[in-house]
Image (cartoon, rainbow, N blue to C red):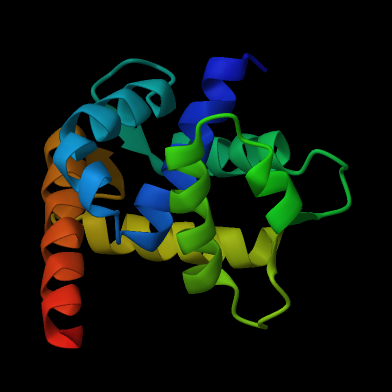
Length: 152
């Protein structure tokens, strides 16, 4: 797998799973989401169907599980060269780590990613358009900003 794809997968893992991007990511989200979407649209038909989405989840998990032990750990996340993405994936870890062991199992990643897919698929046709993805991601940025305001 190309290094570029690994970076895209890491961004997907955080932006899509957590749907709670950092402020800097929120500003760049349309561009990042577009690139991620285009990488996941394997047949280039303008949609990411469930099969493509599942392949992206599997490929993304394996790209980040460097030692092939079945978990994505904090150390593996910190090995991502792009430090902005490191912070995003660490945020995803906090959201998706249901058992609190500070690592992500394949099951935790699949459950979190499927939650994203279900919420983003606004017309319930079991495929994501770029527009659905961008609208959902923009809503995540707005939800994150609102949550940050409530904490102040």
